[in-house]
Image 1: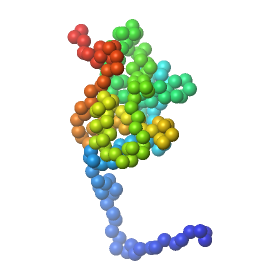
Image 2: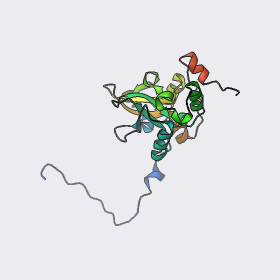
Image 3: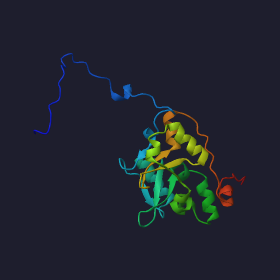
Image 4: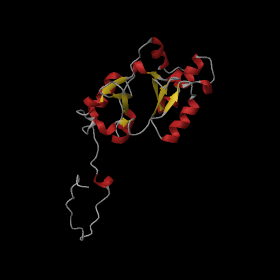
Length: 193
């Protein structure tokens, strides 16, 4: 034990108990560090599901683990896309089912996911200098509800969710998806029938 040093002790005879951490925790706002909103995959394993997973099964997973998203993987567990909890419950599923000529219960994550090549990534290093407002501004500009967070070696290590920011800060979202094809434009148009 010669490698260690004795800590300085304090008198505790006054017996005052500190308030709980939650009471003392400063409020989070748009100028707070962006890192406070990162779902860090090295600290908590995210929900993953293969692309063949049905919408019903994915909804059960999300509900059980109270998550805002599912990472969609291929057979080799490689990330191929992302599905939000909102997408899993949207009318978009019915539209896709009709277009694919299948029952709603047959629609899989592959059919509704946002492919990884359409997702936006930011480095953990750049987030360490950013505030929550910067992250939200980036999502608004990119038309995306999520930012994937990457390590220095470009591995995906986390995610920031616009819905989580809105829920935490009690603010409205103003993010409009950016269509990358004509079929995506049609998917986002409400049909009168």
